[in-house]
Length: 287
Image 1 (tube, rainbow, N blue to C red):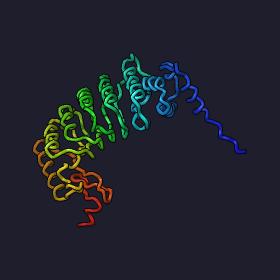
Image 2: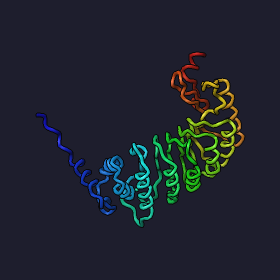
Image 3: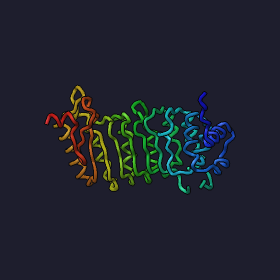
Image 4: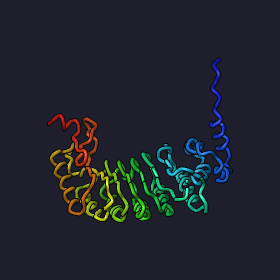
């Protein structure tokens, strides 16, 4: 007979804590910081919403990696996370989620519902958010007005915004542009892998005149760069991207800007124009 490896003390401690439905912040304030990431992951995976809420309220680190840990999100667990953030912000003292509100929120590569997005925007006390990462979250079928409200609420503090691969189209960006134009501290944006036309990209860039602190800008190639089969026309791609950058230079001087196509269906690479310009493998071979 082969002996089974006994569970570690850490594993046993986590199991005991997760069984305790009365777990509150006073108990978590005494929990060693090293326990938090593993316990939080177990609580999310097992959908222990009471523990999730209490842990977020007592979170001792400056970053809350919800997107990386919540592999199978659902509305109830998502609401527990946000309720924990609200509780943390309402406290008169903070343990060891720190003396400032949450600065980084990452919810990536997962599906969220309209109810999720609505609830997310209602957490108005995320007033000092500096980094918002929602890459890989499909937004195509959602009303983005709640996201616009959130961006308006954090317009004075937001430093980076990552909306890469969110499947957005012109109508979505139109909703967000008024809020983006107010984000005066914004220094990094990523809109790669969305589907925007030349006119809406032009409109976005024209509304960034006041964003003097912008350092890194990543935009998708205009949809006019593609033929009817979805393949990129290099001549058209270079022409349109050059026009966009020239127009932007009339408004302000971009520091690091690039436009990128979708992944090439043949070779799996992108064509990039701007800083770090390159063609996909197929186009390089043709030349």
